[in-house]
Image (cartoon, rainbow, N blue to C red):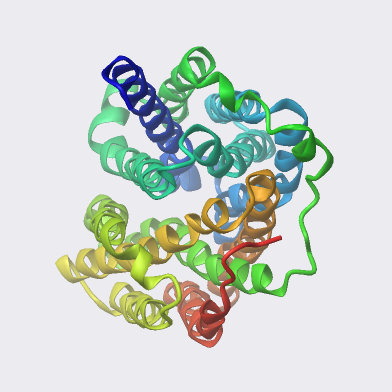
Length: 395
């Protein structure tokens, strides 16, 4: 490559990586604004534990339901337009969640927000393949890092900074939607134009190959981790409040999310050597089971440490699996393979917070909410050997 073309290529690389990182943060800003204020919503709207489970499970449900329609949008509109649309819907739905003091309005706007995020999630792997086809590993790691930052910021800053600044949890939701709206504008204006279409073949092929048994197994494996992560975020606040450890809520939620960062950095260096190794999944599953027990039976700083280790283990598996669609699929199939995996994984995840809430309500024992979370780790151990059969290309 000559010097004349080198500088524009570097600018394009940095521009694409920055937009992918920002889009990654937008995947979680609005969703993770909820856990820190669950006790406030719970008290103000007189919610049961089951209703809390429904509220926190709705985004996962939309991630499953809207994944395949997201693939259709990509096939018909192109990556760039679909990504901008997803970010915009995410921002609008997220901001309007607190506009009306009604649980069904809150549910409806959460559904809209979740649909936007679902479209984004399906769009980002094809964006990686189209914008940076020779740097898939780097690009995936970058947007995954953005996703993790998007998880950390709301849980770490909402209670100590945002609520004192804006005054209410309703305005807090609007606060975290503002940067998402800005990111939509930046992607619209500055994303590579080559990512606007997938070609005529992608326009014809958007329906996932549901006969691929490996995608099912991988989707369920990812689903156990999604369920563990979302359910733990959902029930830490009320559980700690119930057993007199409420002062550790912000620290525990922050640790759960900050603990993911070291895992993403380590996997950046060694993921290629672990693609077909079973042991990382077994080890991470055992860690998730043990740390769930640590959250339930620990106290004080030990709860925080257990949450951090659980975040680390969950993120390790997340990083390994997210790189698979753009790495293993032909360019025109990335969106439909991604849609299938997300549909399966979030279908698994959506039910666990609801089951956890039901178990709590029916038993009257707060700690029982974490039993389904621990069982997710057991299921991951059972399914882990499937990783040995990952093909080089998913047709």
